[in-house]
Image 1 (tube, one colour):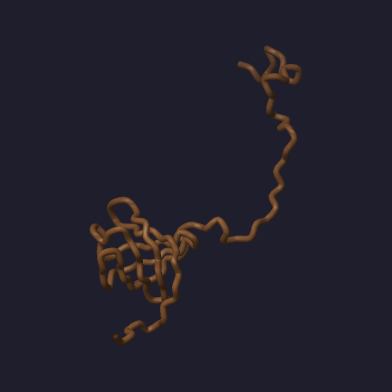
Image 2: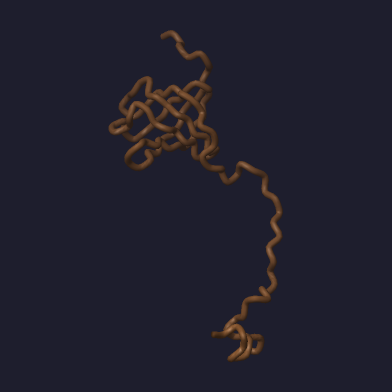
Amino acid sequence: MTERRSKPRMRVDSVAFIITRIGNPVVCRIKDQSADGARLFVDSVLGIPNQFRLVVQKTGEEFSATVVWRGPQEIGVAFLEMQGVLAVAPNAFPSLPVAIPLGPDPGFYAPENTAERPASGSACEP
């Protein structure tokens, strides 16, 4: 069999979602991928249209895809264009320290701390 791809595919094995114009997203696995397309593994190819968006769960990358071939549980797609990043993966950016105040908020009065509450009839009450 002659290789017809213009760019070599690399083994990926990533979770992705097939997003159609109607219906719920279909979970699939990207088995291998190149810059031009991918081979997807699905439970069933029934109901999957010839064109859809493919969103990679880990990276959030979004591709506009068209079906080139179908098998019982596999789909070969060509990427029409990359749409960008739909969502950011949790590990996409390095962790940065965040300052979180742990002391009491001066505007908050806990029910058990009635001594600090404003007196009845003060300007805070109607």
